[in-house]
Image 1 (cartoon, helix red, strand yellow):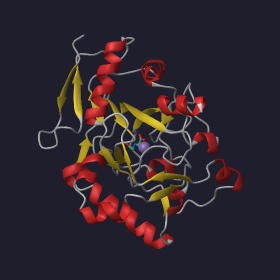
Image 2 (image 1 turned 60 degrees about the vertical axis):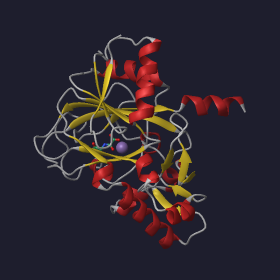
Image 3 (image 1 turned 135 degrees about the horizontal axis):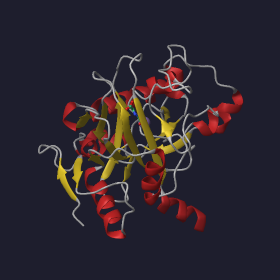
Image 4 (image 1 turned 90 degrees about the vertical axis):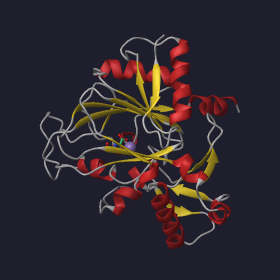
Length: 296
Ligand code: OGA
Ligand code: MN
């Protein structure tokens, strides 16, 4: 095995690794899966270049890390242009393959992804890794950024740590969309994703590091009024997304990036929506926790 991981940034050497010496289209042996999991626990984000994957290849690669989730489509039932429900469309391409026009409903999801979040934190089933495969990217804009929530916790003032340590956030699937003015969800859709309570601070099971976990999906914080809670979340996101904690990825077609949703926030950056951007995501469920739940 010749897999090599190099830190992307010497000034935050435990955040973002660049991986070489692997072909993601080949089935992985146990040792390689472990090397990637270990890399994920250390770096939280792994970047692979020159790995153009077909739909089948992305599914086959991803599923080696756990069962795959199909995201919000479970509630919205939106149509997909892909062969698999588990390929999540992170682009502006319409069902017929053209660039979606301005009033296409799917663009609300594209735009909501430009707010700092962790994928699917609003659902009961806990998710672990997300993986993005870049097929077509615009020349300008449309980067994806990740923020290191472990370093963000480490650097918080003690008084803030004490203030938030025992608190929880209520994560709601539609909160970020409603913030953007998209309010037309039926009671039935809303009821498929009731808000989920998650700690604002927890210990990452793979690295043992503490994680600060704010997100645009949080609509309320325990023990606080709604406005106080939202202000606290805004403050924590502002802290966690300072330049020193953020990596911005300039996409090239064929790039593949894996991140740990339990250790990072991410967002897309603005681009001209009339220019084609085609990225495809897979997201794994947290196998360990699911097994624990099944056994209890
Ligand atoms: C994602 C995501 C943002 C973007 O893939 O989950 O939020 O536009 N992406 O790159
Ligand atoms: Mn996302």
